[in-house]
Image 1 (cartoon, helix red, strand yellow):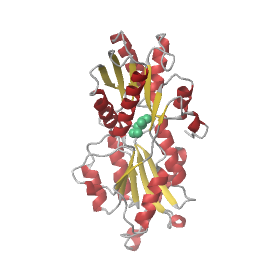
Image 2: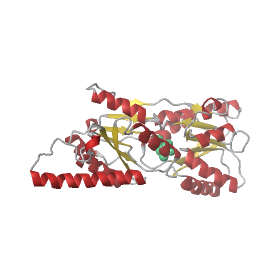
Image 3: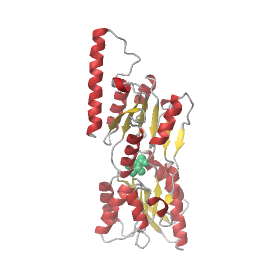
Image 4: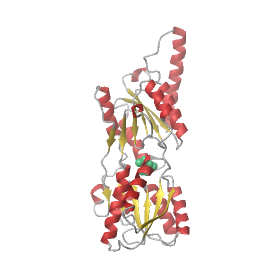
Amino acid sequence: MKVSRKKYCLAVLFMIATLLFTACNGTDLQNQKTNVPHEDENLIVIGVSQLGSESMWRTANTNSLRETFSRDNGYFLLFDNARQKQENQIKAIRSFISQRVDYIVFSPIVEDGWDTVLEEAKEAGIPVIIMDRNVNVDDDSLYTAWIGSNFEKEGEDAGRWLEDELRGKKFSDDQVNIVVLQGTANSTAMIGRTEGFNKIAAEHDNWNILACEDADFTTAKGKEVMQEYIDRYADIDVIVSQNDDMTFGALETLSENGMTTGTGGDITLISFDGTKTALEKVKSGVINVDVECNPILAPDIESIISKLENGQSVDKINYVEEKVFTQKNVLSVLDDRKY
Ligand code: GYE
């Protein structure tokens, strides 16, 4: 954090100095980058607006970006953490535009409200690559490409897994009471996972979704909302937690209330992301199933950028590969899991 701030401050100071120098000398800076120190002029300048650091998934995603867009790999990275505020993301993107970066990469916290700033980027001729969550804009020429997960499929995968699980237990005709810990409102991950799971739930008259409330993808909120559910509902059969961090919070609450989950427990626990800590809990049987969401997006973003650099066309929508982990197959990935 310190390093990037310092780098950023140096870059801004450099910009101011260059502008003053230009004002005195009357040089036209129109086609020069104002933010890059002289020795870095051949580097590709990437402005990344990360939405925050709310989860393990997000940390892994940020690390992937920092590793890939390094000086050694030929990049000058301007990284901004918006700390869960859309207004900070908009500010960061505007600052990247004014510094005339080569590419803008960003993960939008919510879907709505991006038209104006993306129009500004388009007008400045800066390609925008959206990662992870998506934007809801009228004109999709406002961004060059999107890369991320098929969130609706993730939700469906969770629903199909539950279907099989209930069938296996031969009580699929019994009433199944489900509570959902939802991710950040109006975020693509939350919308897709909800729609996907609800689609499967709608095929089963005996699946009762008792509640579906916002726990913001954080452990603290997961803990809090889980307690509300326990206070409100005497009979919970299934918890669908839309990310691992909320799952960890829910597990704390459940254990404080003497309740158990997983293969040998009272409640079936479904989670999303597939972080190493959660997969350990799949292995030990505390979490029944974890639907993977891949945070290592930077190598694919880099290949989109290389194509654009070579004047090639790129696919507009790019999905990453994902799996579903249970006790049966989790060992195959656990040792190599980096995040
Ligand atoms: O599942 C969650 C994070 O948008 C895919 O955001 C991402 C989600 C991820 O906070 O852990």
